[in-house]
Image (cartoon, rainbow, N blue to C red; front, side, top):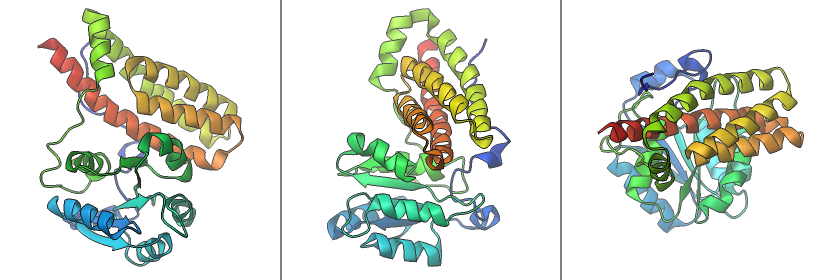
Length: 279
């Protein structure tokens, strides 16, 4: 069966998975400039991030502490927050927890953790309510991918220079292509056919308070994702599985949203790999 290159729609229609802050989608449609808040108590880091973001046409404001960041977001609202994890006083993790606690309904502002140890801190970031992690020192390509992933072409904003930057097929995916040969596309089709159904079932279990069922689905999805090279999807699923097992239901809906977004991003890379394999 042919591989579908378009995104699989989220369960419940496109509105079920906002690509940016969805408190007022009509307002976003009228705004042409991405509004970004950078929270970092190191002025050099904040200045660098501001410069790079402005090069993509973003309107950027900075906050030197978690307390200031929360107050500014409460007054102004932002489309994306880049949050230093290790600020003095109220750190990025606690700042994000408080931000999430204050949100309601469909309102959800993407928060990207910013740290010098992204891989080791990733689980902690996701558990605190962050959606993604950005490595210090930041590169323009990495920042562009963050913008595209969370507020890019599928959202309400056009980001000059960033939309053309797509995540590259990683080495693990290339190795899988070589291992499977002609069967690579078939395996990709199976994964992209079953994963949306599993995600929908997982979300239904969480909505019904079925932590056991959600944990079982997360475990299965973690395994299949790891096998095909979707490492970040697998990692998030393992985190959700542990949360279900340890009785931490408050972080589960946020994790489920992050899993769906990560799968959508991986779907693009997998589609590119399949197309490249055909040539």
